[in-house]
Length: 220
Image (cartoon, rainbow, N blue to C red):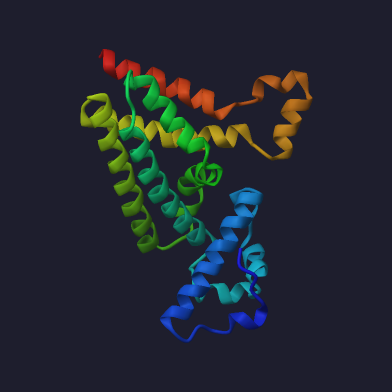
């Protein structure tokens, strides 16, 4: 995260300066959510991290939710490019390898998994329709790229490939919230034997779900 002082954040007078301000805000929001969770970070937290008053943040972003929606779009682009490269390198039995690759590349991106759950629940609900549209276009394009690669690797039709990609990302977000990594809830589950069944290990659970789904489509 950049070290910004209050004096650094006088109103941007040029497009380049505004871009620098926006990038610093996104850097701070990303770092805070990685250290905590998305839902625990407030607009005031982000403003403090970059040395701004939170009212000044509105010159650069509509709301806290827009900041995190932009980071979600960034996550979609990055994950899509990486997972397509990984899927393209698969050799041998494809079904288990595709399931494992999808699960591993998602779980290795904790912030993205968190954002995948928060986007439809919260982030899309407190921004303009234009901001939602911009986000959806990025997410849909990234999803389409992953589905095309799944279709090619598995030799399945377009609808099953799209469903596999959708289940992978939606379940990654849901399971991540259930797992509650790094939170007091997770420690409670671990410390109380009665609650041990509540512990969710995301990667094996997601891999199992995707393996069953892919096998079902291949046997249909």
